[in-house]
Length: 163
Image (cartoon, rainbow, N blue to C red):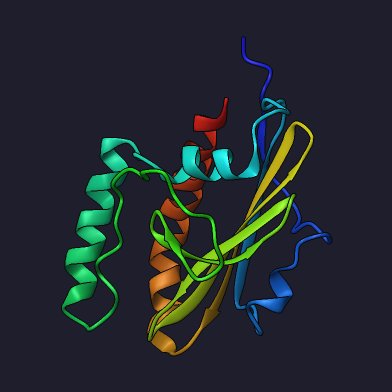
């Protein structure tokens, strides 16, 4: 039996997300415990966002195909991450980096329909992954209505890569 747990939780007060997204229309957070305390934050980011399972790649291809018809970003890359440069403004994996500290990485993207940020906040053997979304129009709200159930499954599945 594994020692780790992944639980939906409150947004950590320590997160700096407020500096990178002005208004919140949607947010969630999941915490995983009992990960290797020596795992660096950058290593956790790479493990989570590199080489997703085949079913997630298929979902992303379907998503990319559907949103390309309405002019949204559709080139989200789900391939592996090769020797990334963790610098603000760089794209590592699918997302642009907005903030990097010893205990938090904030990445994300802005699009016509919504802006989002994802935070990885690490403390010893615990990592909290939080998602923050601001709708830019009605389509953003509709998009999130349909995406949210799968988003939660995908995030938890990607967090399992840390055990």
